[in-house]
Image (cartoon, rainbow, N blue to C red; front, side):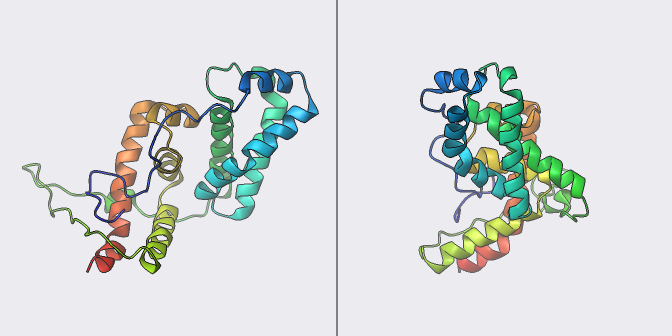
Length: 217
């Protein structure tokens, strides 16, 4: 995070990014789910609840919204498992349902004042050069209090972004999905994922700049 140039992500990503890993014995689990086996649904809930709560918590505004979204996701699986065609991993399908449930709840609630993303993006001269040279943060060697402050600053900055940008950043930079899997999860184009990812990262860099410059002194 510190020392990260403006062109990269300010979020600490997992080492490997890609499709959500298939669950152990996934094909058999899907077969049992489609057969309506109670034990199969219990296994699915036990295996994925923690993972889905984690991703929902990073996007939702409240803990109640987090829990409700995950419950809605599992309920959707219970109702529509027959439509699952196996073209994506079952966990990716559940990620999509969970994220969409979070975003739907946010849209229904309304009333939030997100920051203006355009105001956070770099500006350029007519020549194409940056109006202001992007700042480079020096590495912070203290991994104690400074690290905690960074994580809290990141959480607060992420929370200020519009839902559609925050969702892309969470799935791509936190969960480690590749752009194709994020596009599938959010049911948008890969090009739109890349655009929102680029703009969201730039906005985060601006929001985090005061904290990171202070810590690098």
